[in-house]
Every structure is written in structure tokens, then in C-alpha cells.
Image (tube, rainbow, N blue to C red; front, side):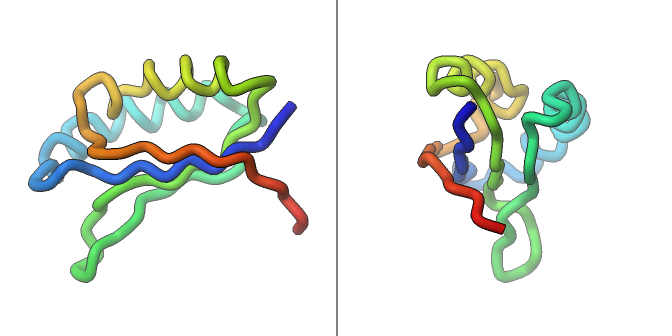
Length: 91
């Protein structure tokens, strides 16, 4: 099992799209159970969401990519960019 940090940045002017799909996204994340270490929004200067950070555990990158592809936020085209890195949890 590997740990990944995922940083997603929203497209401009997509706050309404984010909020309209938020509940579906949260329900989708709840399905991960113990594979989800951390999840939350990245905020702009006015404390409005402008992206997401996820720290997730998956067997491999293919399984992670399938999960990300099926996230409700991804399905509606919310993200401008998605960056994935392998993460080593120390504490």
C-alpha cells in the first residue's frame, strides 16, 4: 500500500460547480474508509475554496487514478490541474 498526496486546483469561476457537487464528493470520499488519511479544500484569500488536498492510500497508481477519475468533482470538470505525488507519512 502506498500513500499519495493529491493537489487539485479548480478552474476559474467554478465555485458554484464545486458547491453543487460537494455532497456527492463527500459521500464518494466516505466510501474510502481507512484509505482516506486527510481531505479538505485549499482556500483563497477570501476563504473560499479554490482546490482540494487529499492524502490517500492505494495499492498502486492505477487504482488511485481510477478513484480520482470517478470522483464527482472530476466528472463535472471542476479541476484545472491534478498533481499526484508519493507521500511518506512520518508523524
